[in-house]
Length: 156
Ligand SMILES: Nc1ncnc2c1ncn2[C@@H]1O[C@H](COP(=O)(O)OP(=O)(O)O)[C@@H](O)[C@H]1O
Ligand SMILES: [Mg+2]
View 1 (tube, rainbow, N blue to C red):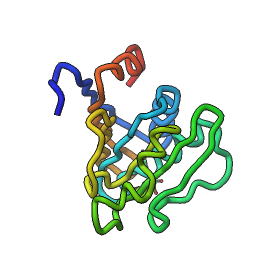
View 2: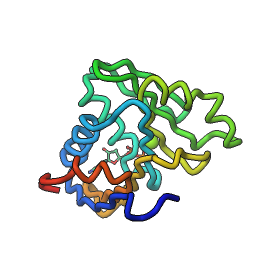
View 3: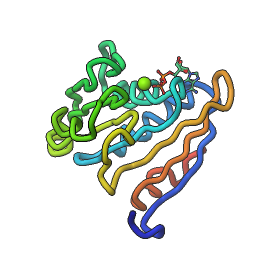
């Protein structure tokens, strides 16, 4: 773990799926080549919904399936290629390498559900979703300090 002063922590109340889409759009604009977004939270917390919002904000128009069974789905977008992983079903942490994390990060960005099934890069953007109601979620962000600027002046 890096020094705490190099991290940005922020908690966001998402009152609806629309707020989640708004957060996804904000993240989509900020994502850069080499970024890992580690998405944590219980089943149904909204990890896939947020990943879908990010991909839609990047211009993906077709269906965006959950990678629950395929483990990874790849998308070309106008700005950068994105690979969306779901590690729930991997049996060994080394499988992430076989699934192509290194390639994903050298070409674009990775969105990873159930990231604790493997080892995440130290500079990962960590986002944890908690269910607070039928349509509401709390999002906790723990990211490299540079992400503070991305949320500065935003209404959440
Ligand atoms: N504010 C919200 N943000 C995200 N998902 C929400 C929200 N409100 C309701 N939902 C619903 O919760 C479910 C989240 O499912 P999903 O994204 O597949 O969860 P996970 O990938 O974390 O298991 C979806 O049915 C989604 O429509
Ligand atoms: Mg999911």
